[in-house]
Image (cartoon, rainbow over all chains, first blue to last red; front, side, top):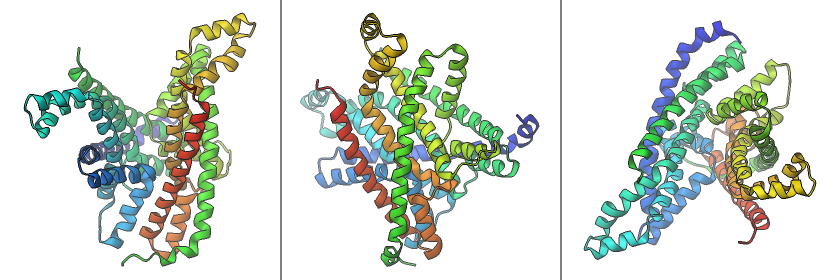
Length: 215
Length: 218
């Protein structure tokens, strides 16, 4: 174990970890938006909208995220979409994780007892009101933990943008492995930083889950 | 520069070969991750402390870091140790170990959930602890987690695209090579996506069949 080397390069890894955190936050936010829209589409009254929602989930979960990222970043310019690597990474990975979050959110919404919506309607609430005020709050409580699984996967998933040369943790580790020939040390350094990010996020999600869980 | 898919057919052979390699690496890694998962589960639950603790640490490290980072470690780490493996083998080891850790978590829970009476009955019939574990407990545990292991294998298929970065010439790298000659990234990656989607459908059908055959009728 080359401690001197680790001490010399760790500032670069910290900088890269900041980029990984930025990527994680932005992709997860975009994913939550896409997930909410996707879940709404999958539960729509209109069969065509339901079909669109199902197609979104099927296509984005049925093909590798790396390929989706490459289509957007390298293929985008051919259809008039010019993005830099960071933007392409956020949009590509955000839309990808959104497909997984769609299923998580939909699962939580449909597992709220049907009687709840019926009771709310009987009490005179409109369909929209019944969903907003009765079903959704209960579904939110159910979806925090499974969304936490998606979020954990996405933090690690941000590593894919190393393949389009965004200077985040994995790219930095790869570059230093190439220049120092110390794969184990560089892996450990990047790995510890990923674990710190994931552990803190995990604690935050369990905190949220505890806050909203029924006694 | 618009889209022009007419260049794709002349690379059909190369892409098809990529498909075959993708299937090969997926199947090889899936087999490794399945048996590796069982072995890891047994180590995590029954091995002596000196083996169990470092193992748990290793599992924790593998579950908390990206697969891509692990692939770089394995590929360059092996070279560093003077072990010169073909990229395909390094890819299988990387994917296989990564998913073995995830499968092991599922199998551990399932082993603990098998009725205690099964082990006791097997011991009463004269089987040793090891025999009882291998012949009675583990088969039941594994059967219970076939569906979630199947989900992991679908994830493995899609993650197999990552081994293109360490030079395994599977579908993604085949597409990249064609792009290098034609400068048509959109067309070839789109075709690769369609091919992955089709492999995915085929794999889901196979998994459903395995599930039907292994699940007890309840």
